[in-house]
Image (tube, rainbow, N blue to C red; front, side, top):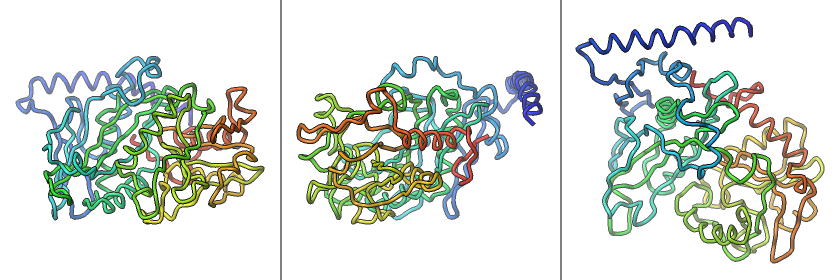
Amino acid sequence: ASRERSLVMAFSRFLFPVAASLLAVAHAFSPLSTPMSLRLRTSAGVSCSSLKAPRGFRTGAASLLSMAGKESHAPTAMNWDELGSVHWGSVETDYMYVSECKEGGEWKRGEIKPYGNIHISPRAGVMNYGQGVFEGMKAQRTADGRIVLFRPDRNARRAAYGAERNVMPPVPPEMFVQAVKDTVLANAKWVPPYGKGSLYIRPIVVGTGPILGVGAAPSYHFIVFVSPVGTYFKGDQLTPIKLKIEDKFSRAAVGGTGGTKSIGNYAGSLLPQTLAKKAGYANVLYLDAKESKYLEEVGTSNVFVVKGNRISTPPTRGGGDPNDTILEGVTRESIMQLARDLGYEMVEERIPYTALWDADEAFTVGTAVVLSPIGSVTHQGKVKEWSYAGGGGAGPASRRLYEALTGIQTGRLPDPYGWAVYLD
């Protein structure tokens, strides 16, 4: 089978440039020399758009799925060895997806447009009252060059209940997932090669209509844009990080928006994060707002604690429950499933921060950070450092779970869960 696949790939490398040249000639002499259109598939009751695609795109469902494998969509956008030297998320790509919804209406036909600024009123709901949610996702390449997403349906679900919590029209899940797929394919050349990074995907739903009195905006935008990224923290992916246990600031409280990716949650975290980084920490580990005793989450990710064969993580109810102060992370959910299937006792429970001093390992997980071992934590001057951190590596459970997760995300390992969504 591998020999047959190699022959097919070799033939494809010969065929695609020839076909592309013939299409270019035909296009040059065609009276229909305008950009071709693509058709979006969205959920029932939501109209789909014809969107302008970059020249060279082939149209139709079959070609949408296959174009990422074409040579014109190979990872040629930049020198990938330089990706680690640029600020995380700072690289701008070619295209973005944009859709609009009026108050009480349905989401309009979305379009793939050249990446750029959007025009909104100074009275926009998001600018005055922070009415908005966002998601974080990644597209990666397999060793043979295929492009793959990881559980986009879970992000679509979370974005929907987050929008409802912020009194915004939820984007139908099918529309959300298709918009993500189309944005990635439009920027396929920006998906780094296997082992060189990933394409970070940022969907946002924001109130862009003008309103000065406190209330829901009269219109909204759903936008998806992307940026190629390397590791989130300094060093390689499994370099242990140093965290400050935050005892002055709180991330969220019961009854608030801590269980959603509301943008205001992150604005409030910037000051403690900035102070921690100035003091030499990678980020902060938040405690509960009521007692300042129990672990909640890191500023960018969920936290796990390992003791023997037992792995624990703070609990969530999920679905945007107002009692949640911890985000229902997609990576968190995946790690919990993998831990159980690898034979660990996986428990959701309230964890006092003092349990870290008796733990064998601790790590943090999220889309951006993937899985990062915690090398040390500091609380009011008292430090806990793990022995594996001295060698710049990870503990055995952290490493085993990291390999299992990234193996599925990049097609290196079988996916018995159906989490990987291939775009070619």
